[in-house]
Length: 612
Image 1 (tube, rainbow, N blue to C red):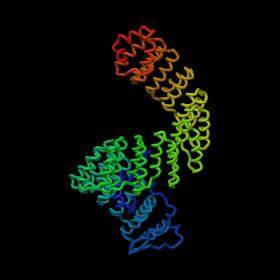
Image 2: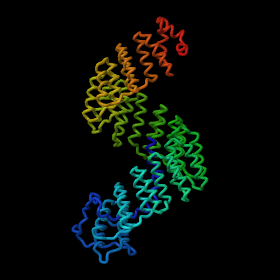
Image 3: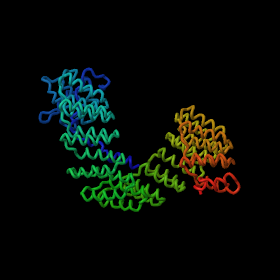
C-alpha cells in the first residue's frame, strides 16, 4: 500500500529533473517535415477553411499573436489560417508563439497537424520551431520520428541546440531507452554543446529509473568534474534510487554530502530516506532523521508523517504510530486516506479491530472519504479474527457510500468464509461477484478452489476450474497445487495423477511444493515405491529436495512401516544439513520402543544422538 502512496507522493522526486526542461519547452510544437508518415498528422475537424463561417480576427497584445489565454481552439485555428494567408506573412517567430499557445492547451496532435500545414504553405522554419516539433512528437510517444527531425535539421543546415538534445534525451529516457539516451548525450558533447544541469539530471533520472543507480552516481561525479554543479533534483533522484535498492546508508552519505556542499535537502529528500529506513524496519534511525529534519527547519508534510505512521505500525508500534498521527494536525499536516489506512492496518495487525473501526469512523467524521482499500484492510482484519458477519456488514457500508468492491474485497471474504467452514456461502458470494459484472481474477479462483477442496467439495471445484478455463484464465502452478492436494485429501488418486501429468502437457513448470504434495499423497495411498521414484526424479528434474520434502517422505515411510528406508533418508537429510521437524521427531520417539531399527538408530548412531 505505502509503496503505491510513495510512488505518487514522490513523483516530484523522480520527475522534477524534467520540470525545468519542460519550462523551456512549453512553448509548443513545431513544423512537420514533408517526408514524415501522414498517420502522425491527425485530421482536425476544423482543418479546412470551409468550416470557418465568419471572418477570423487575430487576437493581439503588444504586437503578438494569440496572447489571450482564454481563446478557444476554434478561434485559434481560424487565426492560424488567417496568418497563413496574410501578405506579408508573419515571421516564424510569430508562428512559434502561436503554436506554443496551442501546445499549452495540450492539443499536441492538433499542433502537429498545423505544423504540417505550415510546411505545405512553404513556411520556413528555424531551430525554435523544429525544437517544438521534436517536443511534440516526444509527448505523443513518437520518439523515433522526433529523432528523424534531428536528422532533417542536419540536412537543412540548422544547428540543434541544448534544448533539442535535452528534449530528445528526455524522450528516450521516458521510453526506457537509456542506452540511446546516453548516446544522444555523448553526441551533444561531440557537437560542442556543453550539457547543463537539465541534461545531466535527465540522464541521471533515466539511469535511476532503469535500475542503474551506480552509473547515475558516476554521472553525478562526472558532472562535478565538468564544472556543472549538481542541484537538489539530481541528488534527490539518486537518493531515491539508492533507497529503493535498500542502500539507505549510502543515501545518508549522499545527504551529508549535499549539506556539506550547501545544497539544502527538502521535504522530499528527507521523506525518501525516511521511507527507506522504515522499509528496513530501522525505526530508531528514522526517528533520528525525522528530528534532524525538523531541526533544520524542514517541515514534515502529510507524506512524511504517513511514512512514519506506516513504518511504526508495521513494526507493531501502534501506540507510537497513534502519537505521530495525533501530532500531525498540530503541525499543520492533515491526514489523508493513506494515513488513516496505515493506522487501521496497524490496529488490524495488532488484533485491535475495535480500534481499527474507530479510525474509519474518525476518517469519515473528518470528511476524508474512505477508499476501497480502506474497507479491504478492515475486512481482512475481521476475517483473520473469524468475525465474518462484521466483515460482511462492511459490504453494505461500501454500497451505501457508493464504493464498488474489487476482487481483493471478494477474495478476502471468500477466504474468510472458507476458513470458518462456510465454503457454500463463499461460492454464493463468488456468483454474486460475477453477476455484478466484476471479473474474477486468478487469485479469486485460487482462493475459492482452495476452500472447496479442503472441505471436500470436489465436484464444485472441478466445475469452477472448467468455468475459469472457459473465461480464458489459465491456471498457474499455485492453483494446480491446490487441486492436486485436494484430490489426494478426497482419495481421488487417479485424478491427482492426471492433473500432475497435465502440468507438463500444458507447459506449466512444477515446483518443489508440487512434488512434495505428490510424494505425500502417494505415500498416503501406500505407494511407497512410486513416491520414492518421484522423489529421485525431482532431483533429476533440477529440483533439489528441501527440509520439507525430506520430512514428508520420511514421515510417509515411517507410517508405511518401512523403517530402513526412513533411516537412510534421515542420514541423507542430515548429511545435507537439514534437520527433522517436530512431527518427524515425535514419530521416531513413538516408534523407538517397539521398532528395533529405530531403537538402534536413536541409541547408537551419531545422527540419532544429534536428534536427541
